[in-house]
Image 1 (cartoon, rainbow, N blue to C red):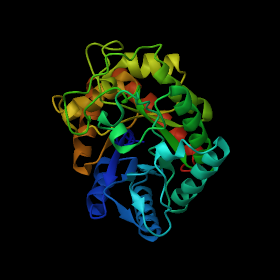
Image 2 (spheres, rainbow, N blue to C red; image 1 turned 30 degrees about the horizontal axis):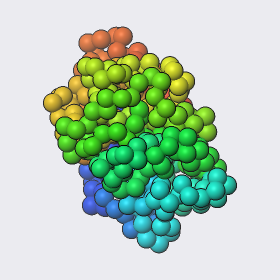
Image 3 (cartoon, rainbow, N blue to C red; image 1 turned 180 degrees about the vertical axis):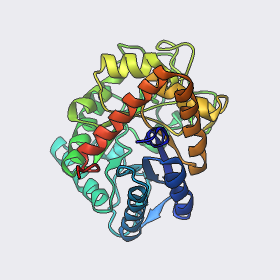
Image 4 (tube, rainbow, N blue to C red; image 1 turned 90 degrees about the vertical axis):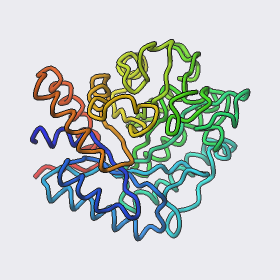
Length: 336
């Protein structure tokens, strides 16, 4: 694998219904190793065809199979709808199910993803939203994306959903570590109101993430919010204390660490290439962006640092190995 192919394995780009050309360019030119459905897709036939097309594009460049994902949580956050994709209850509604029913429910909607060529769901949400904040929490509570206000309840639900997805051969992504439940604004749209002054290494709100890891989640999405008691200098996505120290060290997570969208106001002050470098240095693996045109800047940032810094090349190699191990576990890499 060339250095450019290695860098590309660490990037995931969004694919809208009219954006297939941009995604094909990102695969061919930037060697991106993962895609996710964005912008609202209708019908499993269209999604299955798109999944097959991008996998064929990756194969034609000599790259490993792609991670193909979607934000398929339920409720208002369900990018794949229409024929072949069942309407999914919100997390708030799923929380009222019994554990067995919830596990079976997750297995059922994950089967529809697998049948359409997806192998990764960017769900479940493991954030706990305090009752005192509720719908004033813009990213999660306002859309009823949380399983509850009690981290113990959330932990049980998250574990059930992860187990259900895994039984249908779809990897789960816990998000948004170490939690977005206490902030008021959305990191996707704002650079203010995105600080959690409470979260610490002993925060009970870490419990749902630990439960999801124990249940076999293969990916964790790190938030772009700030947690001064964990790292006073930088957002979680760039923090070695959060990614390596807390998530990989204290919680023992050895799988894929993915960013939330890096093309947002929360990270706008950091140049694109530097966003890639800082995240990977922190211990992360996959940079997610809804904008395929951002892929060249992300990979170029990684390649430039790899050329100048042999130690950083080793860090990239470690991240690439985690990506490839995940793909191998999902049957995307076959020995010839």
